[in-house]
Length: 67
Image (cartoon, rainbow, N blue to C red; front, top):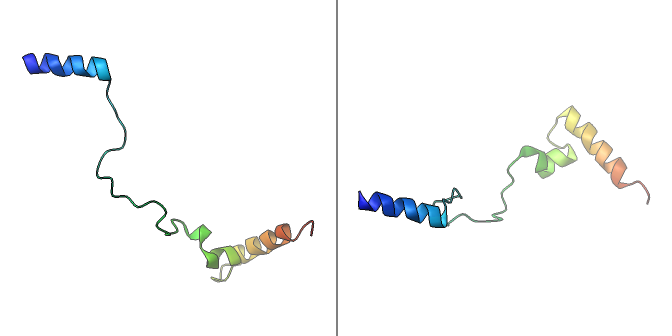
C-alpha cells in the first residue's frame, strides 16, 4: 500500500508524460517520399494520369509567370 501512495505523490509532484515513447532509433530525413503526390513522376505528370499532366501544366504556367 505504501508504494501506491509513493507513486501517487510522485505523479502529483512531477505529472504524467503522455509523450511519444519507444526506442529512439527513428531516422529523421531518411529521404523517403511518403506520398505519391510528391514523387517526381507525379509532379511532372509523366506517370500517365491525365489529371496529373494537367496539374503539371498549371504548375509550369504558374512557375513561368512574372519572368
